[in-house]
Length: 404
Ligand code: AKG
Image (cartoon, rainbow, N blue to C red; front, side, top):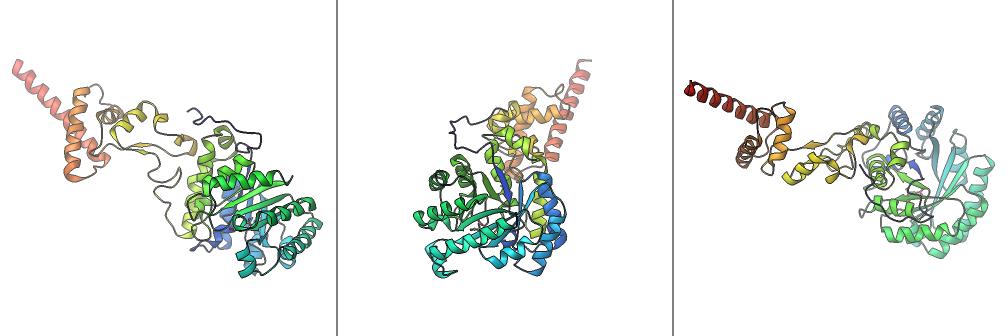
């Protein structure tokens, strides 16, 4: 399958060179129905590691005693992926988290007027002082440090850039921007990341909520503008309706950098990883989930089916085989076409006994039945094909005996 979209990229773009920070065990724990016990956390951490994510972000060890010991247990797994603990910009949280064995700490504090007024009540000057203290402490412990502003897109741009410039000079590994309420659109994301790229020399991480349906597009726009790290959750779970889904992000990037995505991540494990998380939080994988939804590779209309049977790229930008899933050409319905029925006839090994006219006749019968009965299962369609073949054979016998 050819790379689908060829478009110019500039030297800032990181579409084919970025890292995934999967936050299923942090942001995902904030999902409405999530409550991961220790064994489930370990299973999810191992599965994420096997899948190939670069980082696994876990809930703040300061959140509860169980959160702290679970964080230690995840660190003891000795995974290839680095483990990050997400903490408030507070020295007490940093001290607790730094003792757990994590590779780094992801520090966050709200910077929008709303959060400064109604959440922690601190001025920008106080944030800057507190950030300096926490960052320097984390650095003194020899850990990776990321500093992020909550609600970045509703924060004052000048305040934000001054803060990022300051923490960059302190030597943080990454700064993060977060669309905490899902208000940003891809253009705003592109502009903010591009501006930030010109101000800091460290890496740039981004975090997008999906309240208004832009989480994947925003992550992609961030990569185009030079973001180096993207936060994801399996199935996009998280606070409210969640953040950029891991599978959806990879589907998006696949269209532009297929070799990068297929070479770096074990895409065939996506379905199992999603099933594990879906079960853990008690939800079904949605029918229209990126790649693994039950309808994701079902082709139905006659003209689609015909073309897909000739060349799947006609109606697919993702090759299901790369993700370990299969395509279905649905044939038992009133929109079916004779090419799709012929493909089924061929599959049943009946091509030598059912010619084009025969396929068209079977198609007519399928449509007629579907008009009355609704969608027919594959077994029913096969039965209609076999009945047709039998009728043909009986007619041949009758004609043969009449001639004799
Ligand atoms: C959010 O702002 O929505 C968060 O979950 C925090 C993001 C971050 O730490 O960058």
